[in-house]
Every structure is written in C-alpha cells, then in structure tokens.
Length: 305
Ligand code: SF4
Ligand code: SF4
Image (cartoon, rainbow, N blue to C red):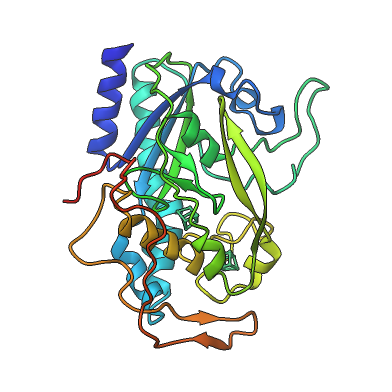
C-alpha cells in the first residue's frame, strides 16, 4: 500500500492539507473503548489524520487585543466547521471511490460524557469520542506539549485536525521521536488565572508526556482569548488563541523550534492580560527577554526560512 498511501497524501495536499499522518489501528490498542476508533469501525486498519494550520495572521488581532472575531472565524470556527470538514469529506470520497470504507470524524470533545445508552452489552455507549491530539501523536505528527495541547514541528500549536478511519491498510508513518516543547513553563507563568498547575502524564502508542493539569473551569472564565467550545457547550474552552498558547507560539518561534517561521517575530510587545473579571492587568510595558531554552537546539529540524 506504499504507492497508494503516497497517492492519498498527494491528493490530501492538493485539497489543502498541511499535515498528513497515518497511524495503524494497533497504536490505539491501549485506548479505552469509549475513546477508541475501533469501537466506531471494528474492521479499521488505519487512522488518517489530516491537519490544517491556524494561519499565523489569523492570530494577529488576538495578540494585539484589537480584533478577536477574525481569529474566531478563520482560526477556529470556520476552520473546524468548514475548511477541515470539506477536506475530510473529499478524502473520504477519494477512498470510497476506490472501494475502501472510510469513516469521517470531527473532533467531538472527549470530555463530554456519552449522551446515549449502549445498544449492546459489548459496545460502549454512544457517542464514542476520539482524542484527536493523541491520535495525531499516534500518526507521527508531533507531541503533546506541557500546556497539554498538540505541538507539531511545522507549526507548534497552530493546527487543527480532521480524522478518517479506514479499512485501507495504509503505510504507517513513524512516531515522531523529537522534542518540540522546551518545558519552559512560560505558558503557565503567563496565564493570568493560574489555570495550569500540577502535572499529569498523557500518552499513546508508547509515547508519554508530562503535561500541566489544566483547570478548564478557569479557562471557561478566561478573558484572554479563550473561546467557548464550538462543538458542545460542555466541551472545554478552546485555548489555541488564548494568551497561554500565543505565548507558546512566541517561545517556540524565538527558540527556532518550528519550521514555519517568519521575518518578524510573532510577539512584538508585552501581551495584554485581563483577570477573570476582565480587568486589565498588564498593558504597554516593553517586551521582556524570554529566552527560555537554547535557540540553537532546533530539535524540530527546522531551518529559518
Ligand atoms: S485559556 Fe486562559 S485561563 Fe486557560 S490556561 Fe490559557 S490563559 Fe490560562
Ligand atoms: S510555552 Fe514552553 S512549556 Fe508551555 S507548551 Fe510551549 S514550549 Fe512547552
């Protein structure tokens, strides 16, 4: 299936995919049935992860604090609800046209409890939800950073994913063995609400990561760019435009840890901050030096453009 996998990837790129990874279904063997793609499609052989970048420019108004809704559209809601589903739909068509069964999934939040009752004693309750961040790790696309969000060597935290479960036995991608997160802790330090505190271990397919415990009740009250979950009112707030993750973008770019970099730094001045009552706590000071890890050690393998 090597040639067919290459053909699929080429087609995915032509349809706008920035990241494409294949995980053999065996990499999910330790995942509980309530979150395992094989519960949805027992004959599955492969999980295809399709990522599209969050445009760096879509975060500019968020970073400056002067335009929040264009990130909401281009960086979040339209990306999750339109651009990625269109890509996944076309990829599913591509597979079906060649006789393979292919199941398209969107990232329904895993923290939302099953909303139905089991249809048989040997099956988990609907809806089975798959952790797309861990699935992207299983597909070899990157790692889970300390802020408990997915990081790729191409974009750091700036991507979102769609998923297809298929019975096509695609050529697996190797697991990503590098390190992107510098464990600088600046995501936690910059959080005005102290929502990243304590640690836990997460992992899949033999890869494990020490990450911060995230207090999502705090994030739900965050006035620093966190947005309500677009898929379910009880889902976790989206943090990819929030201060914690914009700080991560800045840290990784400054340290040369991402391949997608630019002539000008992402963070140009001290970021604005608000407390849980929306009171401004920081504004207008000069940007302090934030060298958190050795900029010379680019384990992402990226050269500055
Ligand atoms: S979303 Fe807001 S409250 Fe949550 S970790 Fe990020 S900055 Fe802190
Ligand atoms: S800000 Fe630092 S510690 Fe936090 S996820 Fe990014 S690189 Fe890791």
